[in-house]
Image 1 (cartoon, rainbow, N blue to C red):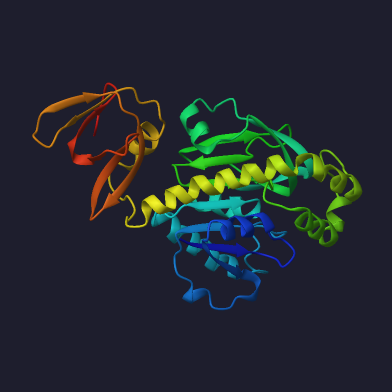
Image 2 (cartoon, helix red, strand yellow):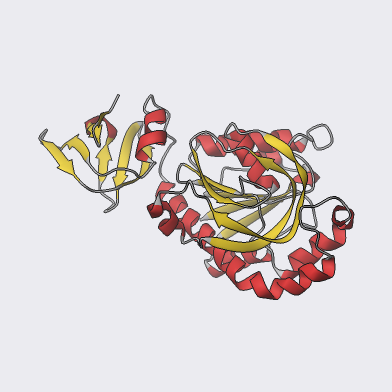
Length: 314
């Protein structure tokens, strides 16, 4: 599997993501966006990872490569490529999904807890991702995203409602930083000293941030590895597929992927009507035909679907 990781500044990296790729023998291509070299030759990967950075998604005049990156992200979205965006990366992803990026009243810096959103009622999604209900994690941001249309809010914090989202089943945005090793955090602190002097919701000194790393490192590493493993499964499952682009899209987004499915009605290969209680877990398009995937990996062609629960398919 080919993974592309886009870095936005030299001092913001993820040792844990690199080590996870090595452990699973995945080919990792790291692109230094600020160098603005070879971007037009970059191929669409099996999995795209977008790291953070001190710039805003709106800073296209100072960082013109952001325009290229936004187009690349949009291309990956349209190609059903799994994407993980972290901090700035999450904002770039959210923006390409139609969300707004806005400045916060103050920065979130240091170790702060996030909680499972009260709106998360789809337990199956939670169990698939293997996420904890609460997580004390590292923050370093002064902007946040609105929730993209059709996305599920995963985490919120006291100071920032939209901390993480899942869009469909393949696009994840994390406003916080569960991906950083001690060296990664030290690099942020050394290069972002001016941010520590700014207004923040819960001021923490650099020394205090480093001391707390030992308390939260293991659970954060476990968190980011679970998210990566989930997206890797999606990437392997989608390698031969092309994206969904049909009039069923809104219906899929709001009904099928909601996971609130207790009964589906469809025509079997012989043309007989069948009612099943199997769960719909994903959708894909192959050779321009739309399919559903059930929890037992059975595939149903979309044009055989009659109804979901008591709702007729348009």
